[in-house]
Image (cartoon, rainbow, N blue to C red; front, side):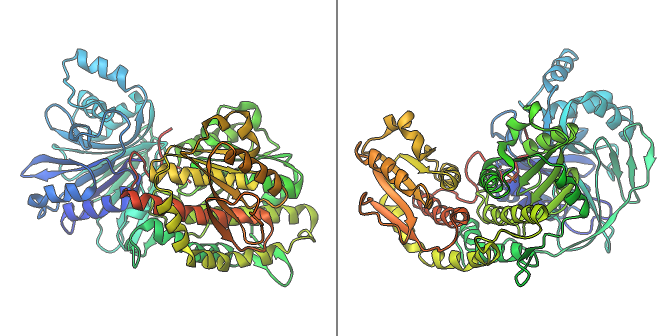
Length: 613
Ligand code: M6R
């Protein structure tokens, strides 16, 4: 959630400019507040600001000429409200050090009490300030030794970067269960530290992902790497090229809208090279070891959070239908505590756009402890989830900037369909005879393009339904999971209390919520249960509820005459329809939020990458 960026070594241009540029690229991780610490005239200067990084930028123009070791941070509040005092960097009582932190110190309260007994006065409500004071309490002139002793005292997950006034050329970093990358500019020699490689500027780098409990001491001359027991190890850097891809919205007003419109190309890229049309085969190029593992698998658990969990639900249904194997989707933060659910015959499919979601990481590690094999699906290369998995596949959605996930979701679905078909092919030698799956998957990009061309119709419905404060999404089977996802979009950016229910379940309770002020979005994509869902819609209408029907063009809606409707023309198997329905309702959420004037790309209280449990 929080993002760390630091500069040291042969700093060749304004540290402030470099940190601001890095923070802006990390802002997707959290955008409550930000701050920077650097050396000015022998002392540590700290500047912080609440709000977006540009607010910090406005406050630090007086430090712009400095080319010093510096650390910077963008925050997503965990301990303590969004006020400047809680923003990072945090300092000790004498201002002798400043540090930034991503993660949670689980034993912070206990350490805080111990330090308070020694007379330390705390100025913030954060767990991070505890680290700053503890560092000073343990400090004996040796940065490395102090960091090692600090590590022994901290419980929880963290990435930490620290500067100290007695070591003005040095930057010391460590981590446990949170990512931290060291990147050395191959040409200029400058060294950067970052929570995420996406924050690097364009160029050639030598990079190293710190392992848990390692400490790195960085300065003008060297990058020294140490294990927890203080033994020095040779840092194995790998070349890494960054193509500077500035975050441009182009012709679009928002990243979310841009990313909605990028879905046809994201899906084309995710499909590319992964099938043989003539041979009617899926070619995911999974290693032989995966095929062998799959032979021993008796059940599949798909795990994820938020939108990725919804992709898991759809895929679980499809896998079970196609393969006749037990496949269940689980919310990662719940799965990790369900001990009996994984064993050596379980295949866990971990789904995550960012590859950094703490709940998903924790769940997959638990599953691995119980000998399950893990295949992950992520959109971000070099992510923690990839490192922790036995096998992995990448969606090719391109960087998703908007917190509200769109193209990552539909690309995940596409890849999950392919994976399911690949598994079928492993078990049966060829793809199923019925449904020309590959051909149908290939038609999706153009079907999405046609749908996007009709965005004005959805925009008009969003305007007309602005007044509803209660919005219910219903569907059956695949459409129910799509309803979950569509309702999440609305909560996330429109801030509307919205529920999603399997259509058949309404009569068991939620029907009591229905009145003339309730809008029900009925997802009518399911062909097999269409008539049953229509009956459920009628039950809502009988209680004066209003209906927005999203349906197939060839479905006759005379029976219900919905208040609002949007038709989708998609002659493809109903299992693939979630992609199209999701796109239509992404547009609905977007235009509804736009009408309300919300900060759509940065919804309140949220962050793109959720790295706390
Ligand atoms: O990076 P991940 O896919 O693991 O993220 C999981 C969720 O935090 C994420 O999908 C979240 O629900 C989205 N912001 C929803 O649009």
